[in-house]
Every structure is written in C-alpha cells, then in structure tokens.
Length: 134
Ligand SMILES: [Zn+2]
Ligand SMILES: [Zn+2]
Image 1: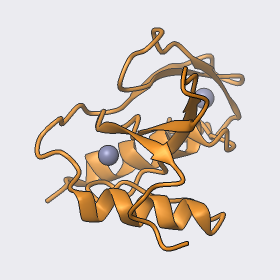
Image 2: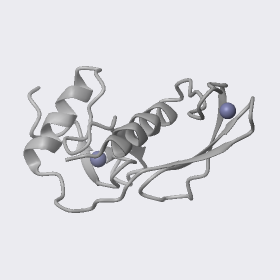
Image 3: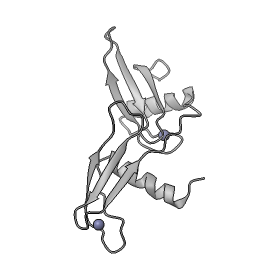
Image 4: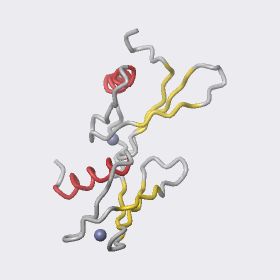
C-alpha cells in the first residue's frame, strides 16, 4: 500500500518524466516549475530537480528503486503488445509509463530496452517480440 506522500511523489515523477507542466507545491505559491533531468548516464531510476520560477524553491523528484520481483514474461508480453498498438504501456508494479529505447544490434535485428525509470525494473527484447501476436 502506498502512502499519500508516495502517491503524490509518484504523480509528480510521472509529470516530470512526460515533460508535463509542474506547479510549485508550496502553500500559496503554485508557480510554474522548471524541471531539469539530473539522471546520471545509464542510471536505472531518473532523478529530476524542479525549481519554482516564482518562489525559487527547489524540489527533488526521484524514482524509488525496487528491483524485485522482476517483471514476469506475461507482463513483458503485455507491455510489448500495448506498445505494438501504439499505446503507452505502464509498469505493472507502479503504473509508470515505460520507456522504450532502441539498442544497437550487431546482427541488424531490432532490439529494445524496456525501462521503468521509477522502480528501475528493465528488460531487453528482440523486436518484434516472438511472444506477441502478429
Ligand atoms: Zn513556488
Ligand atoms: Zn516500475
């Protein structure tokens, strides 16, 4: 069960991840915030810093790493199928939009990395996925 604080933190994380408009959470402010992605290269969870343009207050917005249990085959297949339908798959554990990154592949087959930048779960798959319906 998530606490109210975690729910709010997750909502702000998803907004930052999707480059949506964030407003300052300080009582009585509500100013627009500028979000900077401070994520280290190849980090599994993203780390944003938001700064209010009105009161200049700063806010750290980060994922919450939770590597276990890993995604099972059924949820990976489900995410691939949703992506094939040009829809946005979400992590079955925390409902965060999944990021698909295409990887260089020496055998010239499409290969993707699927990442949830909130919990840090990730996997790689050949494309199109063999499990998906054609
Ligand atoms: Zn503010
Ligand atoms: Zn996740």
